[in-house]
Image (cartoon, rainbow, N blue to C red; front, side, top):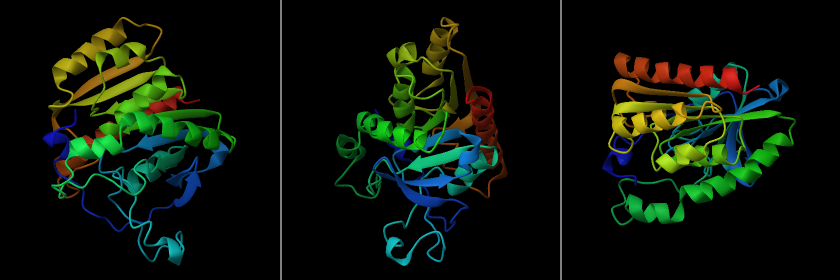
Length: 260
């Protein structure tokens, strides 16, 4: 269950429009970046904060009528989506929360109530038409990365082999049985200081995956970082930036290897 640590350090708005654009995919609004020519796609799935960055209101990517509705992108920053795209992927960042991200300041709607409207099971179902829409564009291989809440969605996609590779970053909700059911190459990047997926649980994941030679896997516990370190960090803290970028590189390396 997501708890206080999951909701710590909510992101600040960041007026960056990115090099991509917003379009409707499989019924969801999504930020997309990169070229379809590569035929390879990565879906990035956010944590509970979802929309946290926003497109600059002067962006030519967004029409005047859209500016109010798209006063956001996702916690997975536009910069990260564009970074993945620059590595040769078509990147899709769907809005799974339909404009209703978790608001830690709303004491009348704690995370337990918010999750009743936005469970990972719904996120999994919402991803199916998104994948079909992506494939209709000529994409031949898809990887998915999930942060916190999004990791549970990704592991469900792995069970159904709806993607070719999976990456879980500081996962929440993911269980031992989930890992037993995974069927595609999976990398799990965890934090040393994490109440939601503590190192002991990640070690269990690693042992299970080691017993499944048919599934390529990689598990790493990043030292001296806390839950959410890959997407919620102070950009003026060199050590925090370095730790996040290291995880981003590991994610990219995984997709370059297995999304073909």
